[in-house]
View 1: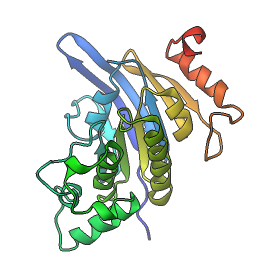
View 2 (view 1 turned 30 degrees about the vertical axis):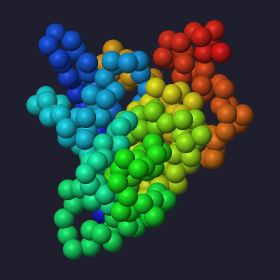
View 3 (view 1 turned 120 degrees about the vertical axis):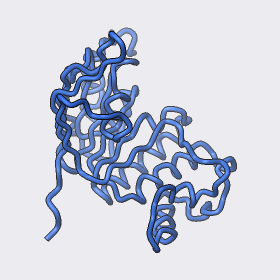
View 4 (view 1 turned 135 degrees about the vertical axis):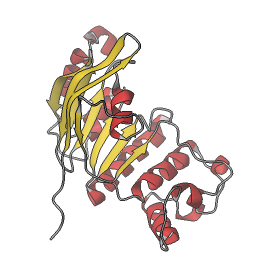
Length: 239
């Protein structure tokens, strides 16, 4: 029998830095296999939340955080070690006799099988992010955290990465939390969009559009406008 999938459950998470409260008793629930986008203004605490979920920051004693395992995270920068070939970057921290085989399988899934022995500095920006995704994928995560991984890419590469991430999500079904500043990206990718403000989730908006999605789809503009309004962006600025 397959193990029961565990939801993401966060209750009462507060994070303070000096006198500034970044997260204020935040509650969050993600269903197993759900793809959720998290939006908010700069400094609203999005990356702080992800760092806590990733185990990079400690969970405060008064908070409750329940997560599936394993957890993997991809950052805005690929964070590849330039002195290691691609396959060793993907395998970083892994142990076991079949590591190379697992890495090769992950590289095939992201379309980098021919770059296994390449040096990171020879990769394009999109290829480097594919390597970072392979590094997350090879860990077979049940929770995948994405911290603006497409922000530095050009528009065409970003579109290709969007399609790749959806394909990987469909194939492996990890619960996925994407931090983004891009409202269109949230509507294109997620099942649900959350808005973080004043240290709490202030909006929870389902995105029921069928995939694959396009800007011209009925309902896209309305969802985009609603999210922008929740973010406090006037329609004149959004046009």
